[in-house]
Length: 204
Ligand SMILES: [Zn+2]
Image (cartoon, rainbow, N blue to C red):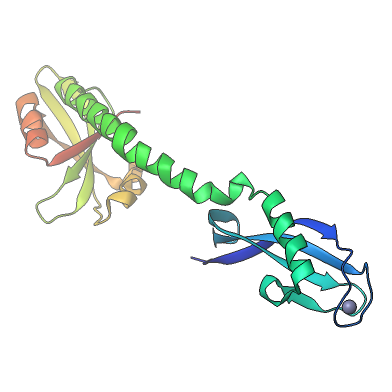
């Protein structure tokens, strides 16, 4: 991941000061700049503050604030004070606040809602419900409801399993399910859910 510091110009003005190097007047430009810490060059995370530099168009001498003579420094300081750091240079702070609000307020509600939905889905199974099943050897696989008859549910077991929960949906292909099916009672289904073997219900 590429992170670093980037400096960009905010405002540029023409100075009337004389260049100490080539002795010509009215040739110096002063630019106020701001620095920000960035992610991937595109996302400014937070501002590191303002600075300024000058450049003589005639001789090409470039000075940072510390190197400037007194008169030039005064102009640069005044320019810096008039220049505002663009609000988007603080994007990272807004992203962080949004992420924290999501973690604190939205995610727990969403997880709770998902768990309540799963409980309802387990109690009232329908055709083609898919259960994410956590096996005893700590892998994930899928079970699919093939048919239902009164209290009995007929399940097709997926032939494959994965160690990564994030890969689980890739297993859901018709050809990946076994042709034979096994029976399970609704009570046993609830038991598998309460024992955290069935960890999620996918209902499309
Ligand atoms: Zn010069």
